[in-house]
Image 1 (spheres, rainbow, N blue to C red):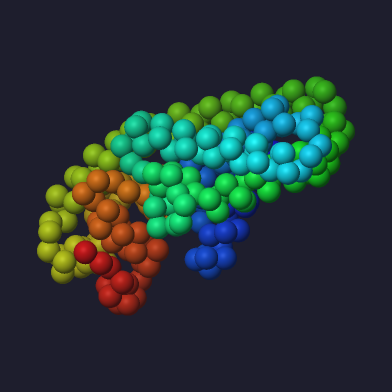
Image 2: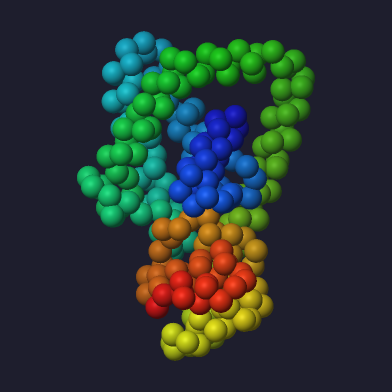
Amino acid sequence: MAYSVFGWVYEVIIRLYLDHRFVNRGFLNGPYCPIYGTGAVLVLLTLGNLTDPIQIFIMGAVLTCTLEYLTSYVMEKLFHARWWDYSNMKFNLHGRVCLLGAVAFGAFSALLVLVIHPIVSGWISLIPDITATALSVIMAVGFVIDLVITVVNLSSFRKKVEELSKSLGKSRENVALKLHTHHDVLKKHLNYQQRRFIIAFPNIKIKSENRLLENLRSALINKRGTKELKSLRL
């Protein structure tokens, strides 16, 4: 959970730098990204006894990229949407992983094993066993509840986007005007979590509805002022 929270903070900082605004980048509602926690535990279990930073870097990059690729594939099959896409970056594999990400995660793996985890494990060891157990149970229950709510809301995500597309029609002016002046149109078709996903994952893709997703993102980010009409694209 600690590394899931660290991963969430890392993602938020990146979007804050790129977009100049706070965006909850987590797939779930809470301030954590489970893929980072899972990746950290995987690296620690498999590479935790190594001391050579180059070896940890290479093996860590392979492990974390494999995890990211599989996560992308499974999520796409489950929810019929691509949540991130590196197709516009050099040396990518099916848009699911890329060389830059591999380098970053390889470096993080080396830092994790050699520097970060000894400090974090030292902090955690200071927590009394009873308190640590209670916290673990509370966080596990909260995580499961969050996961169930997220899966339920996402199960109909693609269907809701397609229904909204039909409701808005095909006219450029019609789409822009409705998204601008009738925000209740979005709320009627998409719940809060589905709207949050559109903002949190700027590269999310749904076959045949990618342009609509761009319009939705622009409308959700810019809720007032006439300039948002100019930013909507079809």
